[in-house]
Image (tube, rainbow, N blue to C red; front, side, top):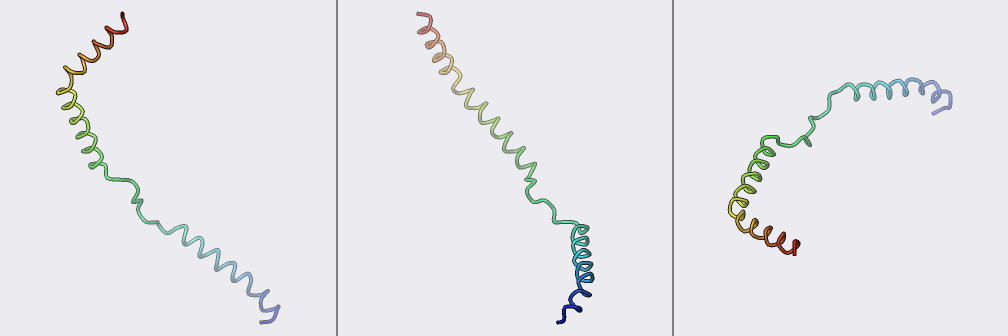
Length: 76
């Protein structure tokens, strides 16, 4: 290819490349799959809260006794 033909086709190649870039920018992308599952997270949070409440209900007398013993040692 002669240098003259290369120079004359350069604006055409630049215009085509610019058109491709503009078309790619205007086409909507894929939906964001990193958003997560909101109902799943709500269920996990709710189940965790219920689990903590159940453990606290079972362990509350022992925790109170442990706390009172620790406070009694500090007061001595």
